[in-house]
Length: 343
Ligand code: SAM
Ligand code: SF4
Image 1 (cartoon, rainbow, N blue to C red):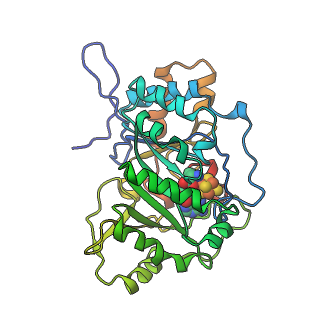
Image 2 (cartoon, protein in one colour):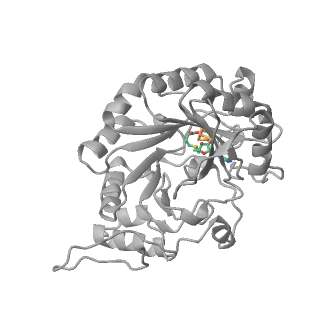
């Protein structure tokens, strides 16, 4: 049974330092955004001209990240996802990841990527500890890919997906369903799972687009399900696992499956087990919440590992019960780009 109690080291007793929030959830998953820069300009994520990208000095250095990951390890965090911005645009990402796994700081890592730059690095990523890849792909139509991402890279993405697949890397394809933009791509994207053992997930669009006007019209998870049902009447729900964000469905005779992430409706918060670290080292205990703690400040001001671990414990204690409570606790509106948070 879970308790709210936090255990600190004592000389006599082997200690449990697990991160357990005040709602009894064990937090063992960190999503680390290594950069806010990106080679695409997805309309739902950032404006055409980009965002105010952070200065290099303001990014956590790889040395700082490694120290931080060791602290997370001591807090029984076991799952690491590398995200961004586009993680592959950060210089020396692969040697950094090799250090993380060679030193046994994490058993491996998961990657969220737009897959435009991955093709030459796939074997090295696998050798370095890649456990699975989530690839953003919002359409299979060349012109719509250009309209959505404002860049012409569909062929690179498809070549990467194929190479990951041939090398047996578990793949999830993430499609953000944007009203008026790519609803017609829901079925063709779902069809990808017919002959491929992958999961195709449809995400509700969130207001994290780096613009000053939040979008007023969204496709909800119900709307997405309705579209799927018209084409796939025999969708069978797969039981929801703790910590998952998608409601997944099997289709009889298909190799892969499909899933819907109610990222705006926030139906999955109850079993949330994650923390986010932004490129500048802000700890976010909820995607919709404010920055809870500047880890960078503590990494740079002489705080000890133990002090930083305690700050993280304190922040986790305040983790909001769900995304609505988190949003209500902010004084501003959620308008930042997802590239600054990591998704
Ligand atoms: N560049 C990588 C990529 O696109 O996969 C990693 C970073 S991206 C910010 C992480 C995830 O956030 C992607 O799956 C992307 O589709 C998703 N995302 C970005 N903006 C979003 C939005 N406004 N609503 C929903 N999902 C969004
Ligand atoms: Fe870049 Fe990913 Fe944002 Fe698209 S969603 S602009 S690929 S960070």
